[in-house]
Length: 353
Image (cartoon, rainbow, N blue to C red; front, side, top):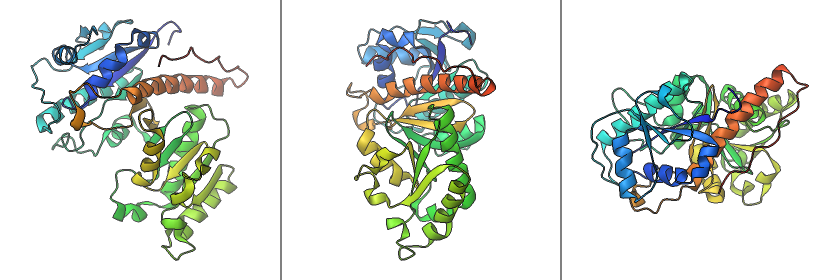
């Protein structure tokens, strides 16, 4: 891609009854954002015009019907559908969920075809999107199928990065999912992502225990001693700086997380509760391990405040900048891997806040 070409940043609209439209509009009302990327919103001009009027925004949209009509310096809206859609903010609606899926599918197709460079997904409602045709618990699983690779939910900020061994798995089933093979795959994905996506040359990774107090030598479950600990030892002996398992209850409160480039939690809430407590509002959900770059904000549809103009777009804006940064870092990494004597480029201009 030529240096003067802007990164084409695709945006799936998410649940139309949620806060997705508001955080998108608030982000791109700042014209400086167009210095960093060319946004392409996968929805319809009709529905975006409704949101513009509702939120009393001065934003201008450029309607297109095909990706070859994308124009730099404009906020492009690709018409995925043409019909009118009735918006009822804050309501769960299966029909609205169908539009979220249409947007996601169109944006993913464009990403696979390289007509957009990266994808930022606005929040969906996991129940509303379910159908006979679409049976995925969320974005991550769908994108893993479409884009290939070993996907991993990676919650990131500049100073804190948390990955998961298991994500949308019932707590009662977590121990059955955690195998030596899974541990190796997830640690490899985090390790490689830290190197190529975040420019960390020698990643240092902490892994949290499965049971309270990492099993207390078998007193509180045997999984840590029989599966997790020996697997981590094998990985460490092969040269990766991987440590643990650590007792999860004190790991974040003690500040120990600051000693590592990434932390891998055994299950969803073990990792996401401390991450969102520390970083909520400026954290980013990044899907590591895919062949393409996808990010999203660290929150959901927030139906309780949808349409009220109260949504904070900070996390969505960070998701935009993270997608751009990772895309550039990957490109540079691939170039330097071919030519290791080449110097790293200077840092980009500062992003607006």
